[in-house]
Length: 441
Image 1 (cartoon, rainbow, N blue to C red):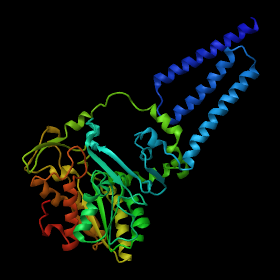
Image 2 (cartoon, one colour; image 1 turned 180 degrees about the horizontal axis):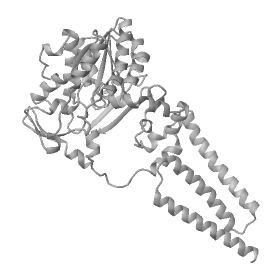
Image 3 (cartoon, one colour; image 1 turned 180 degrees about the vertical axis):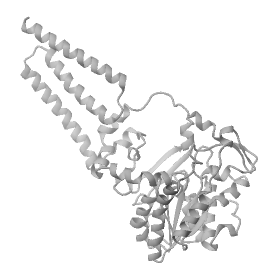
Image 4 (cartoon, rainbow, N blue to C red; image 1 turned 90 degrees about the horizontal axis):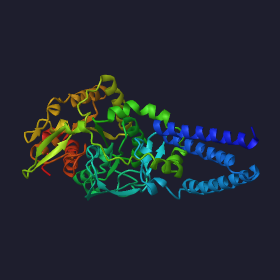
């Protein structure tokens, strides 16, 4: 066999292997961005190898072209990624956030070893409203309801930077209130009712361990007289269970911040975005009810699928441990400490006379005795911990026809923020929200 024929056989064999590998890749799919980048680099190198086999120019010329092309690409890549290292650009903003279940994939967030992630200092965003249940049901965003949020220098929902505050509020997305305007969020309402300065240190996605870090790192330096710890029954238990695992998997902070802001990741992420139409979660359609408001209008409200899961005693104790520690730290500093129980929507709505459970699936749900269990556990650990269950106040307002929860989301309405703020205000004034009926907003 002649040399040229031998070379042609090798080239065609290499091409066949390349095509077969590409076909297998398309059939099996790429599950992560890392694998995608590995395959892109491999395909680039293999493509040059095929080019060198098929063209008839000297190998030295092919090698020179390869080095010049690759060097030019690397130079452009270094310039683009160098802008990320210098903080000049965040490609999450340019290409849009890639929702992968990772908090750092969303623009305006940065890595934190203890907190896992934080909002960028003074970050602002504005977007049309879309509830979390509504997104799962493929309800499109509502451009008529714009959500505008701004954060302070520490990445918390305060209209201005604070050097001190008489009251500090710790919690998750219910306290952050990112579907609520600044002037109607719970901490603003509470500040008006108490006539005191209130710092909102609520942060979406945080659990008890992270909230304890927030109190120590950002709360105590404000020298508060009172600390309010909002405990949400919906996901605080899951957040507490997964916290240590997430910290172990979090890796290096410098690399995390660079990777999620980088051109490489965000361009690759574009290929993972499905062009298929949204598929509604059919199971959520069975978790609905009809709410009759004070204007005699009926609205369909939806519930989250995990709202009535019972919590085991070990899980409850693990979630409560950071709260007990926070109470001790506050007592050492002569700071008043109040725990506010934030209920799920179903706990508030399930037995209202002006609400009709629409399906057999939702009518089979039952609420647990979690508020009482939590209160007893805290009292056994430290009788001086003050406690207020926000359920009665929210339920009374909803019974009068005031929608305290968003119809297609798990969070409060503007009215719900006011009712919760009023219940906490009365607890601070009287010691218990049960002594007075909640105000009608």
